[in-house]
Amino acid sequence: MDLQREQIERQFDRAAATYDSVASLQRQMADRLLAKMPSTFDGQLVDLGCGTGDLLQKLAHRTTATNLTGVDISSAMLEQTRLRVPQARLIKSDIASLPVAENVFRWAVSNAAIQWCDSGAVFSELRRILQPGGKAFLSTFGPGTMKQWRETLASVSGDDRVHSFLTIEQLKAQLKAAGFASVESKTEMVDIQFDSVRAMFDSVRKLGATNARRDRPTGLSGRKWLQQVTDAFEETRDSNGLITLTYECCYLFAH
Ligand SMILES: C[S@@+](CC[C@H](N)C(=O)[O-])C[C@H]1O[C@@H](n2cnc3c(N)ncnc32)[C@H](O)[C@@H]1O
Image (cartoon, rainbow, N blue to C red; front, side, top):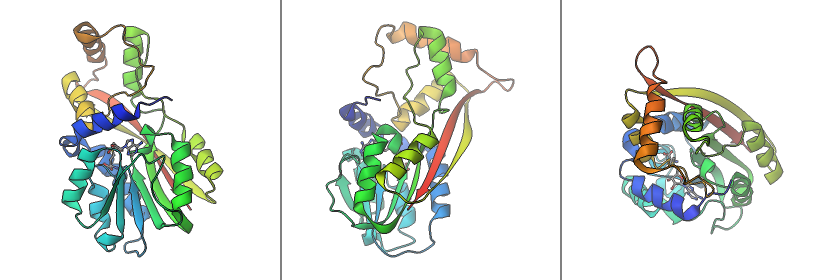
């Protein structure tokens, strides 16, 4: 997958002010990670792709906030984190290439961020910056994510315009290859429902989750494309009149 890093940075800069209003699935995923973590802990923790800082803020109740570091590629996202967790150390960086010494952290979390990156490179960095015996609590998305989007766009323009996602088995293999001794994993399919196509588009836009594939097609575009896609999504309404987007949530617990 060839993602445009600068475009990702721009799209999350734009989404920083609206992200929290539509991130209910991401909050649910963060809660799954929190449930696996100790209720209090010592030692340094890093959040890779910390976004607006919601997870760091919750972790600040379990440790000293000065133990916390957040990393994100988007300055606007980091600004939101700074307001929520002022004592945390914040680093603007690509999480696939971290300006951090090795063996610094005892804990790492990453919620709903790795799917935007070269996950193999992120896991190598994670292994490098974690102390021996360190633990990582990770979530991301699998290939079942937005399958209705993929199918609908394919029916309109013969392409899928959806981000490519790795399977949980591929992610586990990457973690093992990076040097993690033990990896526990789990996936969960979650349906999110919308009462209109516009509400669905708005939600994806406010999350910053627009497509950043360099090879995305550009032929059929603009109003005509939007109308065709809207019409095709209208056809997918269920008996309650709702439009569904499915997400495959992947969880990986590694040490
Ligand atoms: C969907 S948001 C998740 C934010 C947060 N972890 C949460 O739980 O709400 C994805 C975040 O990953 C960041 N991100 C995407 N690619 C990145 C990269 N290569 N390096 C660092 N951060 C990245 C984005 O800027 C965004 O803040």
